[in-house]
Image (cartoon, rainbow, N blue to C red; front, side):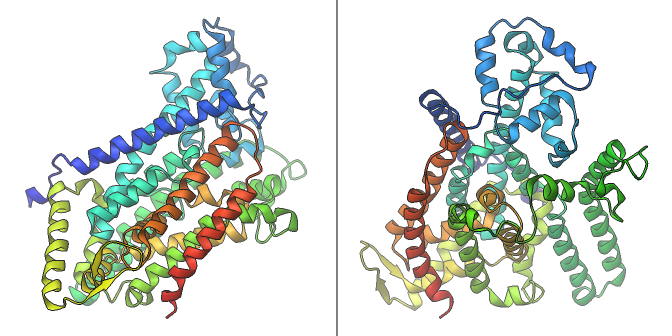
Length: 503
């Protein structure tokens, strides 16, 4: 038992760490390159008026030793980064700032007042805040990549496929947001490493229901089922508490102490939810509100990631239809076992990964002796045993945990398409593991043109990455022609993928 819980040095994990760090260095180099070559499109970085509270003015009175370096760092504070740095600097001053949750600003403040405090007199307080944000997000991304790999090993039961999916995650098309002043890195880390946010409480509900089902119908222990349900409910409540507490904090600051005539409209609602009001009032977020002819280019911009999401869901459902139709309740004990491991992802030892590899190889060797009929893949130089392909297919998606992951992706994709500003779909869905599991499957699938699959996926990822970096760090470019070309290639590939799904 002790050997199972041990976590010896994992060379694959070290590879993931090195790869994640390399991807961040390459991305930051691209950002610097675009900054040097092209003038910024977004001009919000100079927006730095004095804080409303006089308590924050002292920070700006220090003499700065290297103002040019500080100014260069401050110039990188654009888009949502302006809000996060402002909140870290001045707190929540305006109603619309409550759309930006407090974890990232809190981490920025903590670093700027401890580890990075000596740099305040060197580059300035605001530049230090930005530097702290970059440090937090890039470190969080590296840790998120490690947890992504460990989750993938548990679910796919194939270390090679998990490693390949992790590579795609490290170079995902929304990479610019993971190394900028956005919350994507922290969200990915907390989602993959534990539970973060209201929607992700669904994973806890799924695990609780399965444990209660096993206690009642398999172990015949009703008391154990009640205990499991109580513990599961408490864990879900813990996931809701931070969001509810922040909404209460906003209500207290904006609504408390005002008469009905002075109150904002959302303060008078039966459920005064500040976040949804801000999204609707200030950014026009709502069901079908973005379905306008002038927004067609943005739908085109989001079409590759949304198409990949749909293909991922269809493929994962088709791979184990009986598990999806029963929500995993009819799965075998071996298929349910990974679900019980979700709360201990850091206990995936190297020996387990090696054992999975050995099982996979042994199974393919045994199968090959039964059936030796080969299928020549047109245009490739290798032979593939049909039974090897079948065994790999069953091996990769034999975990019930694939069910909540897929349902989560489907819900998020539908929300991005019907409710949100659709152009944010790329970064909104970028932390969803099934996207990379499916892309990894395409790269390894012997039934398709491997070279074409590789080039299509890599071209989409790298093309989007470069476009996003250029858009974020440089000028706004006319990318619709490029995206249209990529979409056409992806559509051709999707046609080949979707045809067997409905056969």
